[in-house]
Image 1 (cartoon, helix red, strand yellow):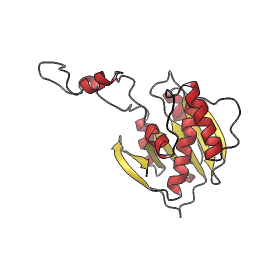
Image 2 (cartoon, one colour):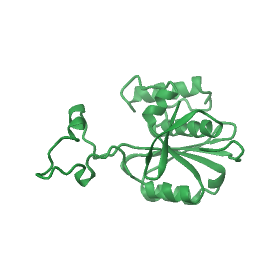
Image 3 (cartoon, rainbow, N blue to C red):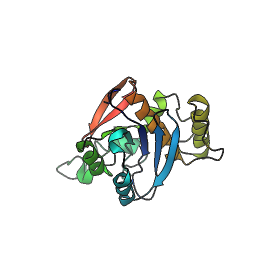
Length: 205
């Protein structure tokens, strides 16, 4: 993915939300893995403007999460039924994209960054939490889960500068993404799980 010989000084994690109704978290680490910036974005225009104003793209590594499609029906039986439910007499699978698992939100922005020479890849937040030993022991993104994740980042991974008050889930997941970008650049073992909208989705081994 990235070569250690390439000089990268910033590592950006973005926990992308599946719509503007929810916040997108952004975290930036420097070359010593110190947290230097936390931010929240909402609309696609906010995200596009963030990258437009980000002046050190070529000196940075970007890790972007793959959010679930918000049209995905909840419930195990409904998810399994998606592949078999009769939609019409012609049995058209994926009619109106309703069986999509991932949201394509902002994919054109990320692909444009990649084509311009920026180092950027995607990740799955649930797989990444498992790889770093930060599995959700409580309901995902609940207050208890956020408190547990924030404490683990402080105690297990040395982010002692995190505030005592609880950070939003999106910011905590963005910090984890930024840490993954840092580790990938520094030679961590990874594999490509699949390609989504032109970008590799990496997992940590």
